[in-house]
Each structure stands twice: as structure tokens, then as C-alpha cells.
Length: 422
Image (cartoon, rainbow, N blue to C red):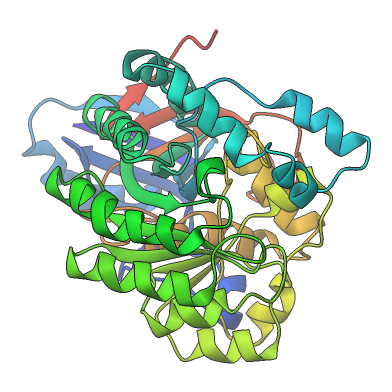
């Protein structure tokens, strides 16, 4: 057992765990001052205030060997739940970064054969072992930055063989790393060059061959589609989601990043777990989401990197919606998995309160991954995935001090984790 005492603030501590937080409730954050936390094996067993510790002492005494950790005035947060990444990729795309600086848009780069198609070329030339090696370093990096659960998408393969290769790497990460991993099959990420002007044929390939192959090896938890201007239509998306449902793959949609695409409404119609990006979100889209169980997930790192309009988070929360935020870690539009910086963008650019951004990257992020029963808050019975901060004045300091790492200790599955990042 691991006993952590003298915690300045135990953040997101719940006696009655919630599945998600929405609307005005997002501005509230359950916190216990001067707290303790008990971990047994890989689970949170109990917690409370230091002054009440004697009441819980008998239960700890009966538990056997206890390792003591004195937080000495530091804070404890649940690990970040990053519900949208593409961190399994080969190489990098800094040349496109220069093109962006020179004024080319995301769509212009894609039309020239760059963007996603550039990453697809690199994936096809990279073996599975090397792809795993590169991706493993990124996973270690995000763990040390506080992420304890991550969703990873395929989508840079765009052939049956290369999509399977990516998903096998994701499965290997799930099997070898202490972080909680969920995988999404994103065969409909872009139209491969060889299918130019033959979108229906490629959608047929995704439905007829790729989905059965993915399901046959149980390689994915979810299915995703890039439903947006210049990519896949709502009709394409509906076909793919329906096909995925037959194999038990629930939808997660890239929607409305570039325009009002109909992707949000399509996702809601087919009970997608989340719809992500959402830079273009109006009253119709908000109304559809309010009537659904779909989590709107914002990716401000992509809007920041691409110099695009930010999603209307304030309007969405004020309307009563839940909001999650994720990193979109990928080589082309958000080459960072730093969820602390995502919180800072939420405050600075989306005008969200510190409590709202913390809720969005913990409990609501867990919901957007379908793991809210095991992650996203400090609650009895949940996975002991958390981090201990350095000495900071308050939880508001985390998004405020956007350029510094204020994590002292990372704990996953009840054990301290440390990686030597190269």
C-alpha cells in the first residue's frame, strides 16, 4: 500500500463519482484541503482530511505493509485523460510548419499532397518495430507531463496493411505501458492519392475490408471519421459509422474544424461517444449536442498551431454542455501532448475558468474515452493514476504558469513512474 499524507489540496476528490460535468457545474471543483490518500495495489482505497486520519487508522493498520509518502504541502491531481491523439506516427513534418509560416493554409498543404498524405508515405516506409520505438518515446513524454489515460488513433496508413500496422503498435503500447490506452480506427482520415476522385470506392474499401480486418484482430475500441469540408461527407460518415456499429465499434468524429460540415449532427444521430475539434459550432450544433450523450471535445492546440479560429467554448458551456479538451498530439497540426498547455489555452484563448479546464481534461476527458468508471477523478475504487505537484500556491497556478512543468511525482497503477527522456 502507498499512503500519501500532508497533501495541500486533493483535487477532483469525489465521494460520489460523476460520469461527466456539464454547464455551470463545470465551474465547481471538489477539493479537500490538508488531505491524505491511501492506495492499495493499483486502486484508490480511501482518502480524507488529515485531522480525521485517526478514524481511518484502523483500516490502514489491518492492510499490512505501508509505504509512506509525505507530500509536504504539495497538491495531488488525477492524471490527465487525453481523449484525442495521433501519437503513433513516423518522422515529423516541420517543413510544412515552414509552409504555414509562409502563409499556406492547412487545406492548401493537403491539396499539394502534404498533410496527412505526407505522414501516410512515412508510415508505409516504416516498419512496425521502428514505429513502436518512435511512438514509445512520445508515450513516455506524455506520462511524465501528467497524462494517465490516452486515446490513440490510426489514420496515417490509409491502406488495410498500414492501418493494421498502426493499430498493432497501439495495442503493443497498451500491453507494455502503465498508461490506460484506448484505440480508434481512423481509416477515413483522408483520401489516399491513389483514390483521388474515387471517394466512394475508398469508403467501400474502409467498410468492406478494413473494418472486418480490424474487428477480426480486436484492434480498436472505437471508429473515427474526418467529417469535414474537403475530406468525408456526412453521408460517407453515416455509412462508416453504421458499418462500425455492426462490429461493436462506437463512433468518435472529427467534425467542424474547417467549416459547418454537418459532422456534429451526424455524430449525434449515430450516438458517437464524442465529436472533436468543433471550431465551427453554432446554435443548431449546440442544440443537437444538448439532446445527446455525445461529448463535445475541443482541441485548442490545433487551432493555436494552425492559426485558426478557436471553438466557442464559452458559448457551449453557458448553454449547459459538457466540454472535454484534448491535445490532438500529431505531427501536422498539434505536435505536442502537453495537457497542461492545453489547459492554459483553454483559459487564455477559450475564456474558460481554471476549474472548467481542469474538469475538461480529467473527468470529461475520461467520459470522452469511455473510461469514466476507472479514471478522471480521485474516487474510491478508481485506478490510482495521479500526479503530485511541486510546491505551488493553488490549483489555478497550473494553467496560469503555462511554460513550466510543475509535476514532481507521477503515479500510475499505484506505483511511482519515472522515465529518462532523451
